[in-house]
Amino acid sequence: MKGSIVKKGKKYYIVVDVGEKGNRRQKWFSGYTSSKDAEKDLPHIVAKLQEGTFIEPTKTTMAEYLKEWLDLKETDLAKNTFDSYYRQIHNHIIPSIGKIPLSKLKVMHIQKMYGELEKKNLSKTSIHKAHSVLKASLKYAYKTDLIPVNFADKLDNPKKEEKEMGYWTKEEGKYF
Image (cartoon, rainbow, N blue to C red; front, side, top):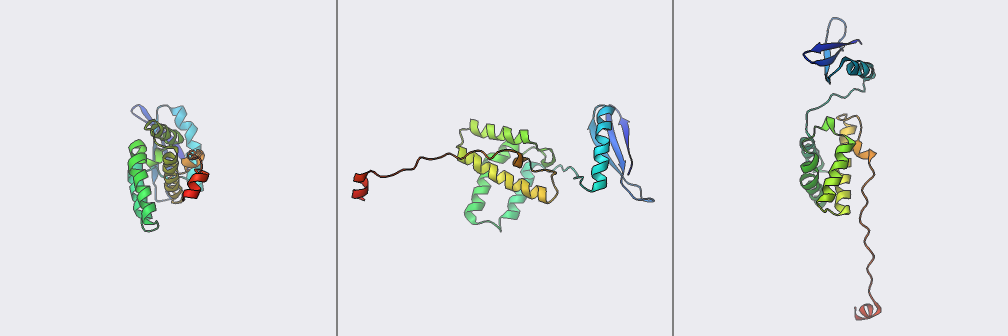
């Protein structure tokens, strides 16, 4: 498998031949502003293609992906669990990171989402639940080769609020 650098306009592209002999196919990778940046990435891209570990970037947004994932999970989840996932996704996750393409999601986006949820005075337990739902959805995306890594795994799960145990006084116990 061979690759080369091509300049079109002000951008540089990596072009890799991925077809067999007699059946020429090329894969183009864009987004480079200098030939040095493209040259740095060329061996990594060729290696991933040869190993079969390259994951094609998708333009699917997080909102689109989460809605599809939730549809798939509906039959597997109890009604209350599904409703909870639905609320977390539509009320907290999508408003924060829904416009980001799934293939471009990074740890910083998730961390920023937690900060936004804290600013909205969401309880730590609610943020914990949002993290759990996002982590589960990204685990599925990773297993199905939609993303190369589950970035939610790289973050610590936000702590739940610890509620002080309530108890009755002797008088309350006797009255009960």
